[in-house]
Length: 391
Ligand code: HEM
Image 1 (cartoon, rainbow, N blue to C red):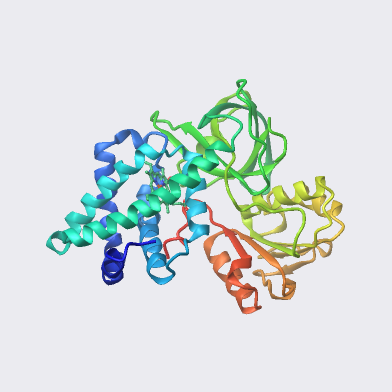
Image 2: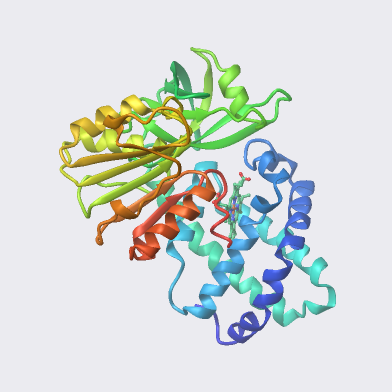
């Protein structure tokens, strides 16, 4: 809870800070990386740094947090904090780094606001920062403690690679040392860390797409982005037997084998969490009612199609609907032409999971809301930085 002294100050200055975020953020990162260049080697993604909107997630989330403190005193934005904490822990963020981020963020704010930043305003926003930081640090400590080991990264060897869909490849890894591995949950992801051609290490998060409950095997499915930095390296340079670094599994968007009727709607490579969940549900003999919806450019482009169809066949209460932009529309896939429409699939008590590109999720989320599904029962997983968080 905000102190009574800071409350009116934050309320009054929120609009100014929210408006200035886009100019504060680049300055913050410039300062941070000038003072700590090591943060660009294996922690922060330099592709995200080039992308203006994604850069704003960190500072933007503080404004969202402040809005919560003012508008819903006593309530914390749990979903946002959990999402950030899981991302942080998969990257190895620790308590000792919070004062560093604080310093450079607040120096950037001071420079941007100039004389408008009175000591009173600086103090109130410092309070917001540390309220949020302590909430994150607490969740992050808990997440680290749940793991089977105290490492951030351990070495894993590539043992299998399988082409799937168009331009997507599944990579399976086994441990390359004796560190005990955590058993993952369906829907979780790992950070993958690899050196790029210039020797600088980069990290990306990938959802585990298969073999979820085998602690000694991690499988991810990666779509090639020819203009990206990371996926071309993993697609083209990684050979069987090569070793790279994987984090422990993180992510709180986990699907259970029991509960309300489930609607999982995905597009393109967004089907990875769905594939993992269906496989795990099938292996556990789940009787949960599941509606699987998938949209893709064409049937052949659908990654992990065989795995998903195999799991659906094993689930007694699973049904499938698909949408393809072009090509054949197989009856056995209950296929329709064009873009997905969720509306018919939504029972009133449905629990909805969405994963795919942002425009797809905007459309799908609107359809679910219009069909009367309350927002708290619509879960979503964004690739990369969650720009919805800061919206
Ligand atoms: C990512 C917030 C402190 C390192 C993020 C994201 C948010 C965020 C919202 C984006 C999450 C997503 O991907 O959806 C915050 C807040 C902080 C804080 C509010 C302080 C109160 C820190 C600290 C570090 C750190 C101390 C360590 C140096 C990172 C990194 C990413 C990240 C490396 C991923 C960004 C990328 O790959 O480009 N943080 N963070 N954060 N944060 Fe933090």
